[in-house]
Amino acid sequence: MTAQDFILESYNSNIEKGKVKWSSPSNIALVKYWGKRQHQIPENPSISFTLSNCKTITEVTYTKKEDDGFSFDVIFEGEKNEAFKPKIQTFFERIETYMPFLKDYHFTIETSNTFPHSSGIASSASGMSALALCLMSIEEKLSVIQSPDGKRQDEESQDYFNKKASFLARLGSGSACRSIEGELVVWGQNESTESSNLYGIKFDGEVHPNFKNYQDTILLVDKGEKQVSSTVGHQLMHGHPFATERFKQAHHNLARLKAVFASGDLDSFVKIVESEALTLHAMMMTSMPYFILMKPKTLEIINKIWAYRESTDSHVCFTLDAGANVHVLYPENEKDSVLRFIKNELADYCQNKKYITDYVGKGAQLMKN
Image (tube, rainbow, N blue to C red; front, side, top):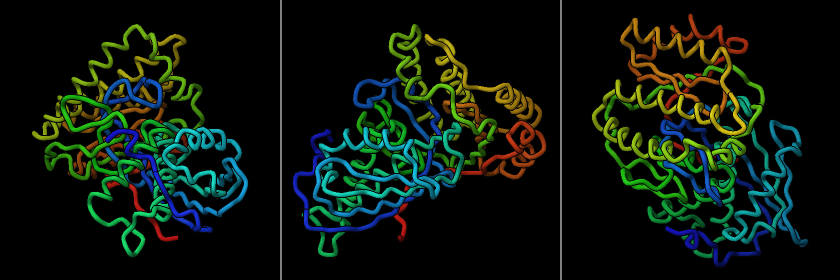
């Protein structure tokens, strides 16, 4: 599909008001996306596990208005939040072509996370995907092409709904396009999988039982704001001396992971995923200006994981997003032993010994108001 396919040509402008609510998960990239072109197009493909417990819950109330321009309020964690408004204003400006009804309504956006904001868990991914899904549900109500009960129910229409939601979410935050569905989602054109630069697509390859219900425990090393935002970090890939080879590496690792998922090769999975995490941070440390988002305790945790794996033959591994927190990944059949290891040896490196236990999920959910 092309961007033109997502333009809403006509809609029912007589609907006065309504309310919709979605829950959308965060995701953790296994092959990392770092660097983007104009219009939120990724420089390299990525693949991610969709999470389950780490999610954003967003309710949007919309009321018809007469004046022109965008009109919205943002309520985050129960309090009015002005800091988020510029990002949502930019998001609305980017997607107006595809959702021309945006200026017809005042929107009250009430949102909350089940995890700390700006902590290295992809809050922008879950947040922007939840908002995009709410807007898609509003579009569905306003659309003049509906089934008798007002819903698109056929498989083709659901596929369109998901793709457009992912397309819109990408224009708010690149990685948000991978949070619409689960369990594995690919974003960015490549030769190994069905893919698109415009939206995320469910991984089309075979997945061995070893990777079913895969576990992710997030160690909250630093719950504060990052000193360098991901948006700035992505831009620093322009002219980066190692960028071209990094983009090639991502294509290669995605192809390798496709084979790994089919075979169930956990040893190779560990090597690829940890290499990707360290490469991501190596690109940060070698950009100009350079920066470091890992903390000393991040490195302590990594060394502890390596030592534990060496002594137990476990398949536990780590990955990192653009922050200090550590995602500890492991197969479901190691859950009890790895959680004991985390409680006994890793929790001390977390702020207030806090960590979040999560696992691979199925994607976003429409909620009852």
